[in-house]
Image 1: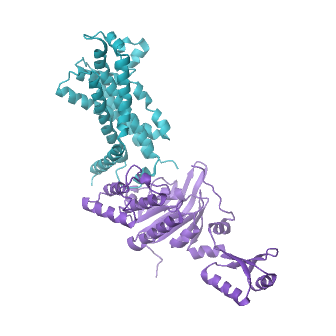
Image 2: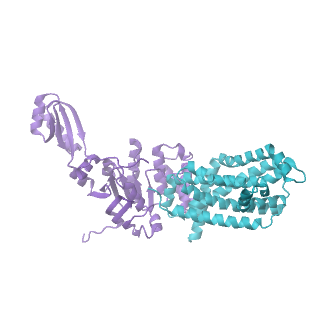
Image 3: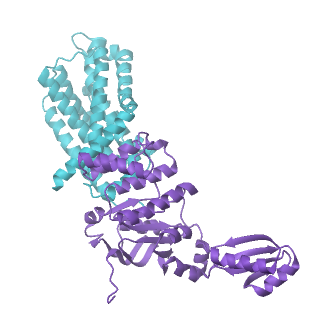
Length: 263
Length: 320
């Protein structure tokens, strides 16, 4: 069997393992979806009327704000699920099963790709739950079929990239407690971008950061696809960030996995 | 036999490993014939686990040459991995999966065909008495069950060489006996070579064809169980007599190691096996001695260690 097909077969086996874990503890998906849903409710119902008025849209108020914030909340969901990956990776690495995998003649990377693909499934399930919640609180996307497909594709790409990064973060941490904190900035980034308020309402320094960090093009592109707002060159930046983060995360994770396990 | 040449399953030459200044393995040489059980005996912290981890491709040696089934461990680890199975002292099962799913996972990773995988899994579940527990997640398993599943998972790919790192540490006596039976069957029925690390001389004695004693990273002795016990100089029997007459007669007639006149207690040199104990009892019978208490002491790891290193076994392993 060639190296590539061996890697694919083993990755598929490892993905099945992760899916079994997921089906055994489906509550995890609810947990990843839970925090974004709480933020959604908080921002739409508590702050929504005020923030919506500030947007200066045609309808104004809460209804406008629900449409504005929903794409940011979807990105937050992707980050939340990626954070879960870090915890499941560190838990896995500290148990004997990974030592067993390392002594077997299998594609080494498959342990990691299994985690990434499993997380992707988990993230998309969480996104679906959050999307339903958003629709229930008044999110009214104007997207056509093609836009939906493109948005879904982009979310998968972003999730893939962030997950590789989180796999690496899972391997630098020694225990689940630190592992759950390391990716915390990923949850905050949508807020410090165009997720919750337009970046031009921010003070100069923060505004500069908000406009150049990856979540802003991510959110602007998703919002553009779903709500028909202008996308401009955000799509290009979003794709570029995805490739960069995925590649860096993959190489870092692989390096960490191949280093000698601690005695 | 003109040449003393066996098919070696495992050869180790000049193996060294250090973590910083701490030398864990310091020039180990071994040659283990195929189809035999080899036991590496040592206290906690002697370097047993490090040795198993190096030979099973988990970590690299600093220097030395290691071959498993003719393949160089450092240069061709994947060829070695295809031959070996490892069951460590910390269970390597997936706690979120059932016993059944754990075995099927191994079958998939070994790329067994659809039909073979079911058959192999059913066979192993039966062999390791796990049929009833097959559908439960392993988080609910007892220590003994988990260790049996662990070994069953190791066997899915029919390895030629199996590393067992302290396979019975922490098990209750009954599970320990079950594990010993399984290990013997592996050699008898599957023809595998077993490298076993243990801190129990009794275990090495019971299972192994050859035993090596590891102390502070060096092999201090190497031989069969009998050869090792000869080094220790056998065990002893402690007799407490009811009256001074019996005590004095025994003290004159038997090979006394030490005596305590106050408690009328003698320590008699003896291998401690059935034959020597029986002849001792026969003598006591003929003499009509009145014995209150008899205790048999067989050579154990402490004795071997004391004889070989002059040190009693001490727990050197840092807390995990």
